Image 1 (cartoon, rainbow, N blue to C red):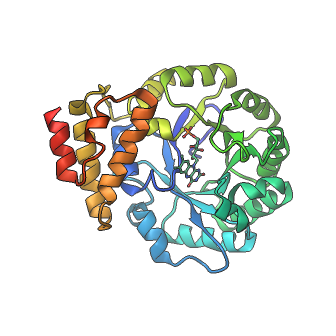
Image 2: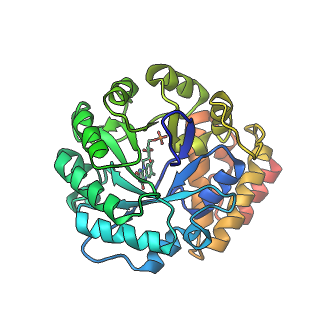
Length: 325
Ligand SMILES: Cc1cc2nc3c(=O)[nH]c(=O)nc-3n(C[C@H](O)[C@H](O)[C@H](O)COP(=O)(O)O)c2cc1C
């Protein structure tokens, strides 16, 4: 199994509209991640056509791994256990090496349609969904679940985590917030240490690990060895490097620490831009994504030069400004 009780791991979080194929390729190439999880694919009444999975997760066409050999779990979201089971079998048939189930998405449209965090109110349904998916996927391939602490109470996680374990999941990832919290503070890391004591299943801790300081604090509070990082993977490209060293993860690619100047960021952004251009022809996609990325990094770590480039109207202009700075 990819996540083992006594073996440390760093997982790249699924982030819809952020950790798409180009971003997964780029970040896994820089190294440090044990595996990544795809953006969620919503399963409602109709089965999703193969081409939708293949477009969102091109890794399926190359053994279920990114070009640097990092496995990608396909994340499914929905409330219909039977359909989710069928979809899990479908993605395995397409080449998926593992399936993750989303019980955390707080988006109102998703929740209104019986998906994501809504399921946190129904532990028995979490059990039913995971059991059905587990039965539909060959036993050697992992099936995991990603939850928030609860809908509106942090202690809901104890019952839900017990159901995840009973249903036969391979591991559980917990974003240490309730759905009601959205992304607002506080992040409740401490309860994760208690959760881990009540289950045998490996637990991946997640939420607000966005800097080295936050990582060390989270580690101190939770005692965890399995981490998932989302926004921090983008806002601080050095974070995974520091975590990997601290967790003594043996890893082939030796990524070097990166500075915060435009010249430091430029090669990364150029690489990203080359990747997105092979991924989509949607006008403005690359520019929008690069601004989203720099905005995230700037909010977290203050990139003063972002102000100078954020009004660029096309990619050549943005790169030209970065070159001049
Ligand atoms: C823009 C955005 C999109 C997200 N999309 C997903 C998703 O598709 N599936 C999922 O399980 N979580 C999703 N999440 C939640 C993240 O995986 C993660 O749990 C959350 O961001 C907290 O971790 P972080 O503080 O390291 O970012 C998303 C978060 C953000 C900010």
